[in-house]
Length: 173
Image 1 (cartoon, helix red, strand yellow):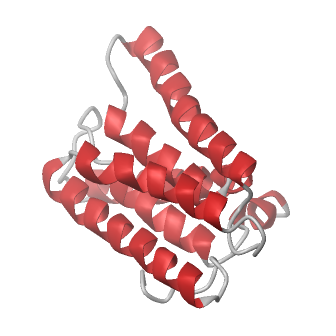
Image 2: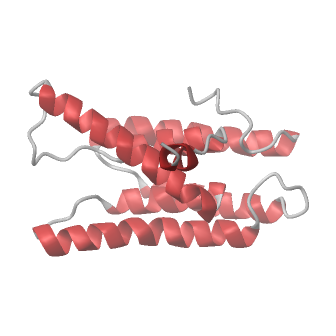
């Protein structure tokens, strides 16, 4: 699946190489978070900076979002999940997600631009909810038990890279 998401980042040789880095890192964080419920800063933070750098280096190629779109994507990606978690903490008295999820969403915003974040978050949330409900139904997860969100963010980032606009599809139903 991850290596089918070839050309949402358009098809110049340099951008294909950068897109491969993006996909490999998403696959790496998917596996690590699924196994450990941790998203290492050693992967997520360089992914943010590399996405910002890639957008800057692609200014005249249209291979990536503009540098401003990438910068806003990183800020909005981090901030949106931070705000959701802050609201959850106010209501429930505990965190609803970890800081690694904020950083991974910042990286996705840096790579895909702020405009892609609603699609990424919608896909990730639907997949995460479906997974949790399935595990609850099987009796393998209790209703208060946490699941890692990074794998679903990674999948949402790859699906969005393929250029499928699920937000428009979802809203048109």
